[in-house]
Amino acid sequence: MNLCVPLVCSVVAVAAAVRSTWSPCGLSMLSTITPFSERAKGHSYRATSTWFVAGATAGGASLGLLMAVSALVVGAFHPSETVIGMVALTASVVAAVSDMGVGGFHLPFHRRQVNERWLDQFRPSVYGLGFGWQIGTGLATYITTSAVYLMIVLGALTGRPVVALAVGVSFGLLRGTAVLLTRRVTDPTGLRDFHRRFFEAGPVVARLVIGVELGSAVLVGSWLGSPAAGAAAVAVVLAAALTRRARSSGRAPDVSVCPVPTAGGHGRDTPAPAHGSQVPG
Image (cartoon, rainbow, N blue to C red; front, side):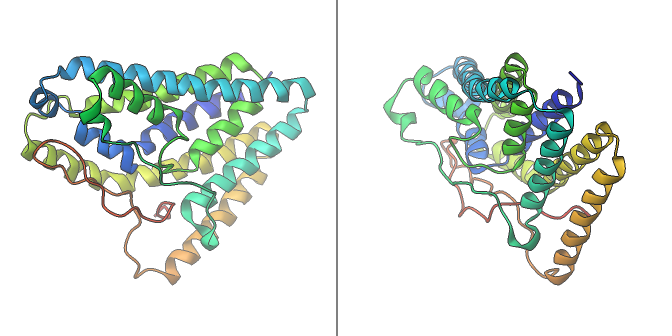
């Protein structure tokens, strides 16, 4: 089987995991599990973060199992490479359109967040694993990018359960290790500075992820022997998106919220924004 779809799926998985860190839950974890907040509770940051990464990896494995079963079903039907390619190309374009909000279109999503009361009710191993698992599944908490859906579709289209499972595990592991970004933060002031810089990087990452989605369409089109088809689809999407942007140039940027760290290191999220990202440019 051609390696195009597994390769594109892997790249999309990385993009989806990175972008998801800017979700309210991802940002809240960066405010909650820090060296000084864990120390204030009498816990070990290293131990808690290890439990979190382990939980996120398990969450990714859970998502990977779903993708593996889907890949098994797809493989059982033995679809042609043309069918697989057309579905992959369409999914890539739809994901990009959703993230750019072209025509007001957005794929379904939810704003569920983890229950931070667990921090006071359970030991670190429990809330570390629990929070991590929910984050790692990609679907249990706030969904920031349609690249998560695209990853799942591409994972199924590989037709290889082992590949799909590996992609899911990698996605969860990468999401989990994001908590280590604050490993050198030692006080609330440093945490605020970190979040300020991190928040400012959000729009750039959002555009890069959209670029990955559009690039996926081009690569799949090339794999099908018709790079013009992929390029044409991307051109149409960009034209529609730029037209939308020109009509709403006075609107405030749409980025993920950034939690306001409190003295105890917990995050308090501001109201969640509409789903989607800015138009590249």
